[in-house]
Length: 217
Image (cartoon, rainbow, N blue to C red; front, side):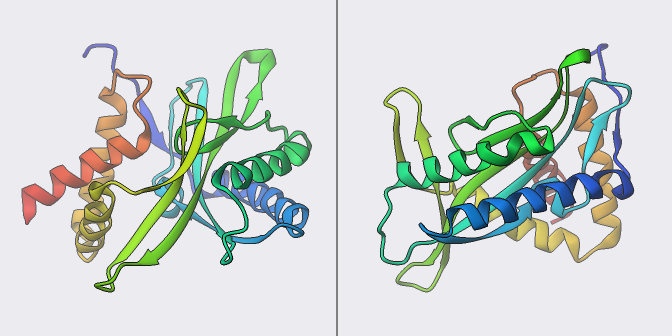
């Protein structure tokens, strides 16, 4: 459309300190929940691929995606307890880093840094709680704690088939430097021409990979 926005890649020097802050916050949360369980974490999505974008002169900053893997082998904690224990711990330290309290959405807990004076979101972080396991055929699976807003219930849900396909395709494309550069260009174009404010970066990224993959393989 003609209301194209202008996006740019954020230089690593700029997003790196924000990432350090998030790591510091996560370490505080790890200490806080230790009496219940331990967990490991991993940056995924655009941050792990150096594809962090922002609108040029816009009022929404950049987002991080983090997977949290809880070690609860005895299955002592129900899904709802795990989400609540983690969200409460994040909320305890969020203010220290300028984050708002966690918002519970379907797949993730979202923390945002809001610059209220200028009513803009500086940046955000989405935390998903995941578990990896092998099925009987030795195939790698991932499930995540899914929040059903209508019913107010939480349950482990298998990642959709597209999730596994995406991982395979990204790996294949990444073997070719010039194709990865194409991904960077197509992704930025998609960000600029996207008119749906509810469309997450991860959806645009998945579309980008599909396009580049089908063009070349």
